[in-house]
Length: 76
Image (cartoon, rainbow, N blue to C red; front, side):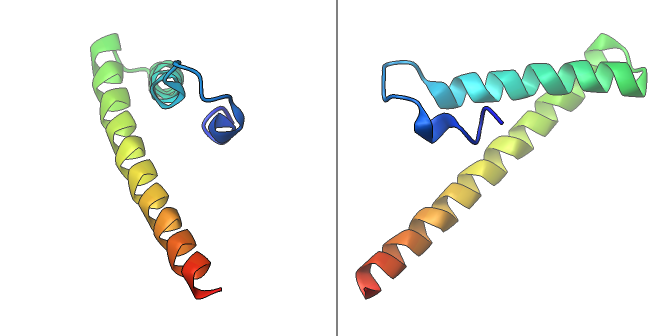
């Protein structure tokens, strides 16, 4: 929910996207640790890989949405 509400925050010098990725990492770390019964090191590695995939997918979706907005804004 925090990631979806980032555009609503003021454009202050706080890097909201980095804060969002940090929160995603911590939540995934705790969920992986709790539900898979892994060690902390294995949970850390799995959460790190998950956060990397999350970042890649969010960048691709952002580029796709901004490209569509540019295309359709120029066609009107």
